[in-house]
Length: 286
Image 1 (cartoon, rainbow, N blue to C red):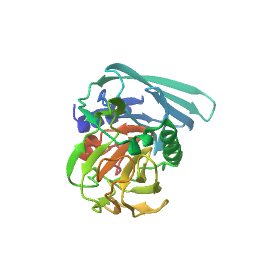
Image 2 (tube, rainbow, N blue to C red):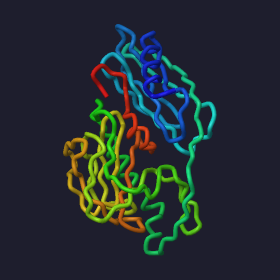
Image 3 (cartoon, helix red, strand yellow):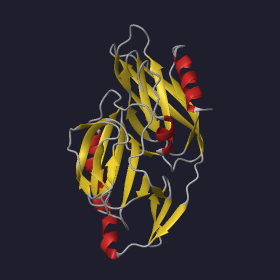
Image 4 (cartoon, rainbow, N blue to C red):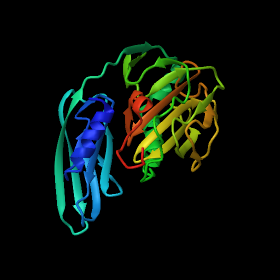
């Protein structure tokens, strides 16, 4: 079922009064959405979505709750359940289990050799420091969507490493690629994939010079290994605006852009937002 058909089905079902999840089959690394029309006369005090071992916030847009989530690439194929937990202002609570199916993605394997001068950046201590910075900034996501339409490629060029690729570094399994690498010469302009607010603009260890943009509702984009950073924390940017330049800082074998889209902390295959955007089914919205 196409994204548009799934969204139309979700919206029509939501109009009947219950929460809905779409699409009902989600490929590893892809996006899902839960929409719950708040019953007339009820005030929501808090709502979260529990899925894939994570507890994610819900955002109220007009008369409905919306939660976006991503299926981690490591999630086993098969049936899964997301649970919407709602606490109302009068103290009453509801929980709604919502089933969906995880489908297998296709992820190639890459084996690379790195010198000792670079493999030191693979330490768990360094990774923990970077996560602390990025995850801490993610808490400041806007409660309204800031993106517009489909997402744009921040850099045109050859994809040197696709999303989800299984990586072995010096014979050791390193994990699956959280984003997409685009090979390009040092200094080439990098553009914002969509509109939002800059949350991070600094040099990290593994990621090198990094920019992270909040697009609202827990949707973020990251741009790494830059030679130059062209924006500041708190700055509003528009889709297509230059935010930095290609470089080779951090854990790299040569100049390229590593970029990611994440929902909350989970990496998303950029192919979906690039092709279809992130639709919410709101009148006049994205």
